[in-house]
Image (cartoon, rainbow over all chains, first blue to last red; front, side, top):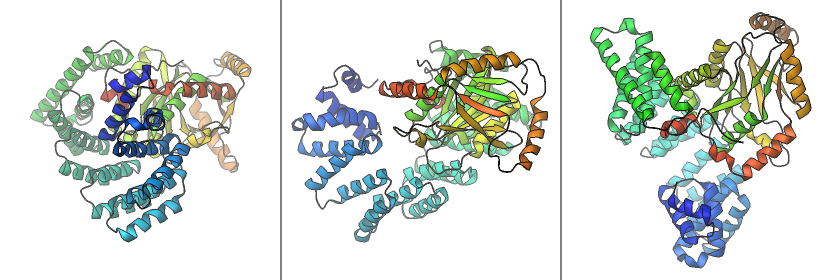
Length: 294
Length: 243
């Protein structure tokens, strides 16, 4: 467990640990709203003098954002303070937009972002938030449209491509999801997650040529990261197994051999992964499954 | 009448899974003791659950195949069977039964001849107005809503005892009954719910009290689902030890 979090579990009033924890969360942009509110709010209320002015306002913004998930009243109070301190700030206006979104006041939020865009037409965050509003309203098809429009302006936004990928998956539009995945691989070719994900999609589409592509991508994902990539080994195991059981007639001898080698490789690695771990139900089940297959 | 009984502890685990990942769609499997001969008057008990995903991973068949394979291997050696699947989507206005969930339910139906899908709606858990937080569906050539009702603790125990004594009397295949019911359904178009099938949960008030207690104790952090296991293989997703 996180060092600071451990200290805070025993001494919840330790302001140093709280400050450290919040700094970590800011750096890694983690959405641990519950912890941020629990340890950040007392930091602001009781220990604000321990923080530099700059950091105090950053923490206030961070706790405000956490409150949108867990405590809207506190967020409201923080927003009022921030608005008092920075009356004409674009950054704080965006926070007020987020607050309206959290309250479900979509029209108010839209008005805020559209007024920002009037003066700053290329503001990326405001444009992005408008897409988020259509997602929150539950209109997936409109959101996909809006997100495509957004991406035509901001092609480099990998987070947006990931979101579009997710939306296409939720609608089971696998070929379009593939396209998003390809964009992600172009943008971040060393990221094993993208290769793993595209392999998953090819496996889902499921024809013989797709399974072979899936196998290649799982293998590539493993090449990029071997040690903590159990899921890609599972993917390789499933794909080679499926090719063996369903498509063995369509593979020539050398292809069958390669497939068999990869299947064994995956099984051995999975076994190795689990044998290093403590005994529990999952370990027993996995080892049983691999034995049955043999 | 075929009945499903959902134990309170499983019910709470579903809700804890939904709580832990409040901003994501969640999916998981429902397990119960193996029944040797399913008849039209069977009581099917759901005694535990296996949380699987907290993302759109449920739409990808590689993840689903793997999860179903592992869980059925686990069931074989523990005299259990997979009874159904539960799901909760992250947005409020989405379609009730996403088709990947239907597919999972139908796969389970092929394996165990009876399956149920629970769709959780966490809007129903608003403070002060707690209602039964899900809808149940059973498969009779297509997915039909099943009436969910709550039994007080006394009746719940009685109910199980009464019905389990009738279990072995009739050996009617459920499949024949399915066709009859579909015909009946056609005649009475106003009936929203599947006839002769009930989904029962335990004492709802007691459940809500216990759930609130668990929330304050942050027990939802102890839930481990399959996705977490893939990131961190030391975690055991097959049994949740939450009391």
